[in-house]
Image 1: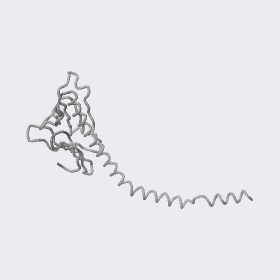
Image 2 (image 1 turned 60 degrees about the vertical axis):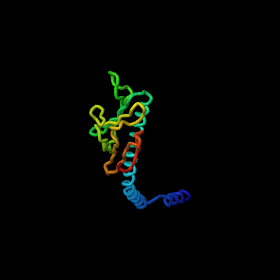
Image 3 (image 1 turned 45 degrees about the vertical axis):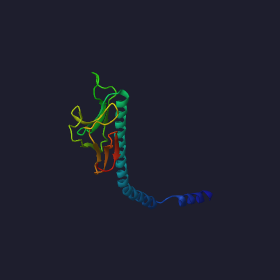
Image 4 (image 1 turned 180 degrees about the vertical axis):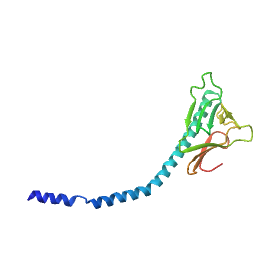
Length: 172
């Protein structure tokens, strides 16, 4: 008798197939509602992360220009979605400390504005020239734009006194 009662108690504690299907359908509905919001959040994080990485590279190039006492060039290749920096004049084998980074695959980078003079270039690419004293050359690119597929963007804009760059959400 005890065995039969135990089996009945077990059957009372279990879920029915209909209850399981109901719970699974609720999970599918909740997931389908949350997924678009999460994807926008993740894309926004990619945009912010890339903007911070670009800003960190400007700080690195600027610091290296000051510490080595020679100009550094931060270049942008819009077609290849890459950017990097190297010393303006390097040894025969190139600059061993040069950096090249790829833009996140969901983003695009573009040079938006330069000054009125002859724009600064490095290997035929638009560039930012950090002088040996750490300031930005007056003919350097004034702003860079990072944009995702939904049209959201972050701007890297030269500061007022050409001492560096900062990230903004709006066009200069």
